[in-house]
Image 1 (cartoon, helix red, strand yellow):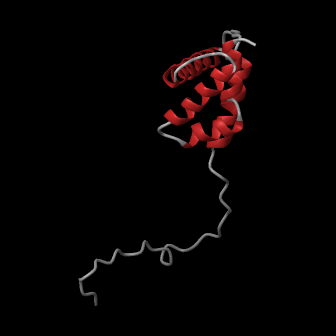
Image 2 (cartoon, rainbow, N blue to C red):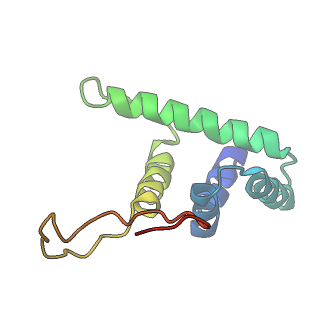
Image 3 (tube, rainbow, N blue to C red):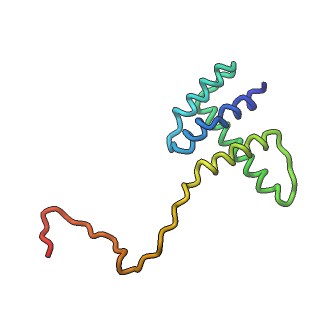
Length: 120
């Protein structure tokens, strides 16, 4: 199995995707990916893993944007498309239940009470 193939299969794992989607600071996630890669014989730093995924996502978006008019192929397209689809699903907020409409007179923003002040 080739290194990029291994890398993408690790990054595509649902647990890794959930951690990446929920983290603004993802160093620990990429450290884990680097450790998992090392177990497969590929020794990379977490920064190399993070940069590789950024580059692959950039390439994927560029190709996907051009596929509407000028069909292009890319070795990693299907895997990146699956990762992108899982990211969109995981990142979309849960559906909110519909609530009956209320009149504007009954839906007020509560006032902020300041401790120590007297109110009438």
